[in-house]
Length: 498
Image 1 (cartoon, rainbow, N blue to C red):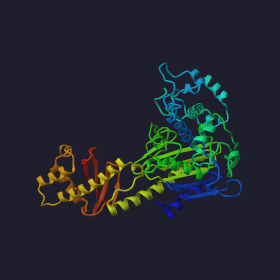
Image 2: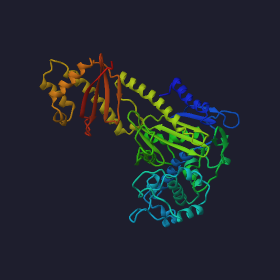
Image 3: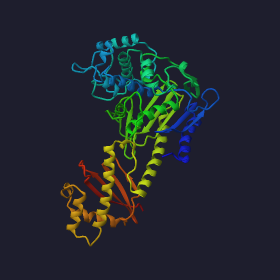
Image 4: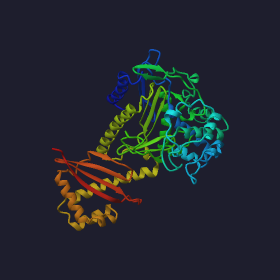
């Protein structure tokens, strides 16, 4: 669905407030769906007296990591590297690193991709290392590294790990990392405004700033080097939204053609390594890391894919709903600005509107809502079977509420809808009595259309039936059997608040 003008105005106000509050000299945002940019806005002074727009160039910092991961996956697809290769294959100097225990494995490419190489979190130090060369990095490795855990056992956000992956990309491709990324990913997708140096940029390049007690201090631009894989890219709202759409399309019925296969793109957006709450104390959702991307699990919206970027003088963020293909990208030019905060709020506003609209449409039509992430034919069949089961359960509840239907008939009707475990878990007579009493307690109109509907997975459905004193919540889960039988059925009265 297209976001309303009212919600887009709320989104714009979030970023306008950032400049008004002195968080950053400039702030720019874009809302996109699977078809392109839906809306953009910019505030403040980008450096030439103008507000930034969708083609203004900012550093995207760690948003680069998804591009690094995707480039590596193109080499894996060609058999040039393996995700289970030890990093010493690409970086021989790492063999001189003393591992944290005698039985610790050498970090593999897979471990480094998922931030589980055992290395400490290193943002402040690593962000200043971009321009060093391979020889200097090798010297760092030979001098030894610290470990926070045995490789392969825990999540820890490591830029050093992605710098090592850049070396693996260069070795597998046979060309420098920046050249491999441009030739394999950026070029084929037409991301011509996404580059590794300010000199290559076609649009106006914003200068990063640091807040020094109320005055802005320009920050120097670093050039490409061994640490560019951690965050070296410059880009625009338009280009980064295009990149996110390419990734998001992998979950649709018609994935975009491109240099990274749909299967690999879906793999990038899977929860590979749990991120402990202590790492993201402000997170409101369970969070994990895939390949160069964070994956959050929202109770209502499903998976939300994202990545932030922070470099001296810059803050970037991109996030999208895997289910809806709706997303937000935002940039600011201030150190530690954390533009992720308004970007997250913006997507929440957009998704709330989309979900409420979908629930209203579903209630009106009774048809299953379209979910981008459920686009595989077999998964769509499951969603359709669940909605068919909803209709059958609705008919069952109405029959159970009819005094003319005896208990034996009620049991037979239940058995026609549910799997045999259901009466074993709770007898039909008790289930019928509880559902009737629950409906009566809230004055539920069992003939009315649902007022809301939620689904965590295609085989699950929860809906609410309106009543004069509250509403009745009905929830089902289907067994994995092709006929689509209900294995879990709960009916719960929810009284209106007085």
